[in-house]
Amino acid sequence: MLSLMVECDVLVLKILYEMFQAQRITLQEFIEHTKVKIVFLKENIGNIITDGERNAVVDIIEKCSINPFSGYHDYNAPNYLADIGLLQ
Image (cartoon, rainbow, N blue to C red):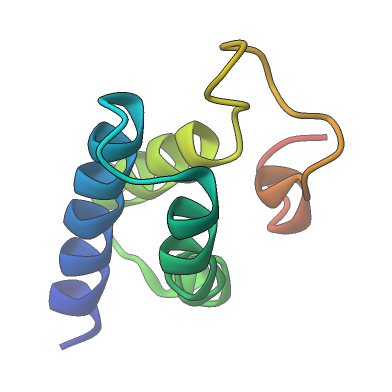
């Protein structure tokens, strides 16, 4: 069941990211809708068995922690990957 929830959250985050990039949702909406999903993924990444799923989670967390306006990491935002021990 956890695997399905992770897969669903990754897909939703990808959609939200694409919608924000296309300016179909505001930054505030993007943040509001991604915050809880990212927390769930951070808390459960250690329970993900396959490398493919883990890589998908890391990829979408990284995308969602990039400043979408500049294309560079937003160093004022929480570093989700460092928080879960994947980046130093």
